Picture 1 (cartoon, chains in turn orange, cyan):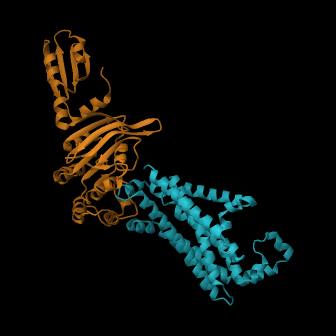
Picture 2 (cartoon, rainbow over the protein chains, first blue to last red):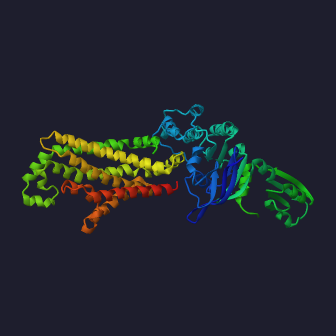
Picture 3 (cartoon, helix red, strand yellow):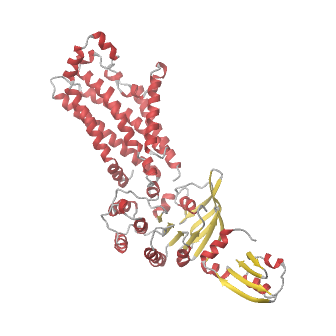
Length: 296
Length: 254
């Protein structure tokens, strides 16, 4: 099966600042893809290039098999997009913005739009300027989903929602979209949300891809080892491939491992120790570890 | 061109259409009816004092009712009010989407930028043409209720020339609306360029730069020959300005 998104050495500069720096990644069709990175990492710029709002300075990309520069209109025909800042025409009512968007799409599903309007309890006659941030996000999601897109791109979609609505939003992504075999590209800083729904995550920093793996792989290979050795151990022990960083307090070490866990464990256990714990990490901890910095 | 977008643009510009038409139509009704009043007023002023007005309203225009209407409509009020309306209609079309942060929403719909730009340009032109022609027809109809003879055909043909000039000014505004992300600043920049061109027009060799010189239709209305060169210049200017705006819009990043 063709990937839903293929980016190859995609680059974008603003002045001297490289917002996206030779970014290459593939998003398999039908998966929920978490796109993570700190503020200013280049997540929104990448999305804007995928949708034709910005032109890449270098590299190339294909979304749903179409070129992101030459065929962006065709991409947008099959892609739903919920932006980080939901600005729509403030003078329109909920029903009017739906009626405005509908003619742009051939596959618009009125039943689906009605279903989500009722689900989110959005008043059809209310003007957009009177909607809360959360309601605008819900409306944007309806507008993105009603055309039944093959790909849904969500840029920080849950940031304006309260806990209950966030849960419902994620449930919709899981149950209504992903189960229908559609691809979801979810950019978010709410790592708990991404962890709940994503199959695959990519982490970017300063526009560069740091890591791309499945959530399961990430959680089984990225661990922390807390060990108190009985005597001094050679420093080379901590420079093995797969060790990202470590901290030391006396003979106690906390070691962050991102690969080769079994080999590292075997090496460590060659030295006598008082305590030895392998600590699971959630996505947030893994993310922070990865974007934080270099080995100590 | 996109029908959905056209309806949205018409809705957003409807108050400008209503108010612009009202102002132009009120002027159009006032001009034919004020002929006698102005004629008496001007004739009461001694000729040596009349010269102080710098020929703003030469007495000979009262010898010909159609000439009076042309001088006060095409060469003055329609050109001046129409310029303001052209700028008002064009300033928001692109810059308004950017300053209102709705450009991203619109451009993530499956519609080409060319279609967005051309639809917006067409909407603005339709609105401008509607205002100009509704009021011009109102003026001609009003003039027919006066005891004087009106050369309606000549006035209407001159209005085609004036309309073309206003479309050039609208295209210039649309270009600035694409270039500058703030509508008021886009309008300011357009007016500045228009003023600059008017000042250039005061210098004889640069007179061709003054758009008002081309759009008043004097060569046709007074001289009797159709201003082919002026018409060609205005057509070319409108096309070049629109093409430049379109190219800029297609390359713009949001």
